[in-house]
Image (cartoon, rainbow, N blue to C red; front, side, top):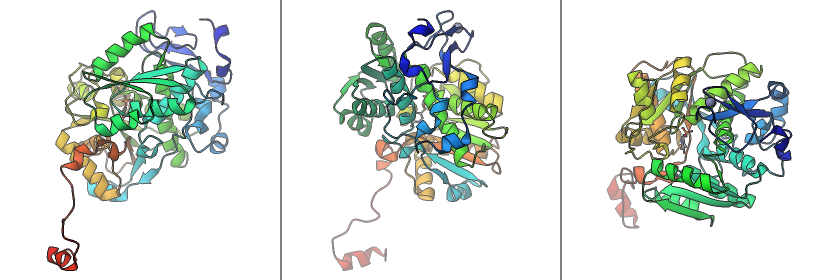
Amino acid sequence: MTTLDLPAAFADSPARALVCRECGHEVALSPVHVCVECFAPLEVLYDLDKLRSVTRQGIEAGPHTIWRYAGLLPAGQDLATRVDLGAGMTPLRKADNLARALGMRTLWVKDDSANPTHSFKDRVVSVALSAARAFGYTTVSCASTGNLANSVAAHATQAGLRAVVFIPNDLEQGKVVQTAVYGQTLVAIEGNYDDVNRLCSEIAENEEWAFVNVNVRPYYAEGSKTLGYEVAEQLGWRLPQQVVVPMASGSLLTKIDKAFGELTKLGLVEDAPVKVYGAQATGCSPIATAFENGWDTVRPVKPDTIARSLAIGNPADGPYALDAVRRTGGAMGHVSDEQVVEGIRLLASTEGLFAETAGGVTVATLRQLLERGQVDPDAETVLYNTGDGLKTLDAVAGEVGPTATIAPSYSAFVKTGLA
Ligand SMILES: *Cc1c(COP(=O)(O)O)cnc(C)c1O
Ligand SMILES: [Zn+2]
């Protein structure tokens, strides 16, 4: 494909090409994700001059969604192909109660459960499907640990695209129902996420479909940058000192780091170091385990954790997440399922915020890193909550319930001693 073949919908995109993350080989913008020279993953390369036309004022005048950052994203500039359910600009909540409980001075929670389908995946899907549409696809697909399935089905439906979504057959019911309800095609696979992903790679070779985490993955991944941009803008155009991020494939973490770097390079924020911390559940902690042991490579594992949304045993961006955390002087941790539930309950009981298991992983890992002296309790910190607790009710349903169950009479209530 030559640049002449580039669809018109990319005319205003600041993206210039795709570039190999290992060997630097460049290819024209197209729906491909691996380097033909070395098989390493491709990522979006931007035209710096085009990025430089982005200003704080321009962003602030934009819509109250991720699309205020359209000038920094690879697709979606063309409104005719933009796929948009209103993702982004989720609350950055000052978490003073949680900070006190953890012994920290300044803590914020970036609450991405407030997105249209209640997880951060709406950001990446919105960008991926905009790219897919710009390339002319009419069917979109994905392998998902749950949240991606919800988001792809919802966005595709609204945009008039066909969606074929693949999930492991043991997903939480909330995530199955929230995908199926849109009336698209949902296929449950008898296997884990890595089995589903392998099957999708095979299907992708044979069908003219846009797989958000296969052939359009380079565009998909860029959507995560908006979680970095928004935090900086919501802090009044400055960077926090530390961020704590949950990891599945590791992509989100690397893109938050990339976003901070871009904002600095473009002069939209003052240069300041941001330490990046990564969180996983022990039952699926290939990246955090590599960090712990000082390994450069990530050894695949078989996931076994209640944090299903993070249960990727063979994480594609693991090595890049390790690089980002080591380069910034951060750290990684992993926590047991019991600690995940404690993390969910701690966030709920301090901040009135009910997170899904991924949020529990992140809170519990922050606590662990504080106890180990790896996070500075006095440095301004942002914790990313990436999903809604209503999606993973089973994780806490057995742990919490009514304080008392009584007959509908005043005397029965008095007897409880609760007045
Ligand atoms: C997908 C997901 C993540 C992390 O995704 P990456 O693959 O690391 O980019 C984090 N939290 C939730 C709730 C998710 O669904
Ligand atoms: Zn290469």
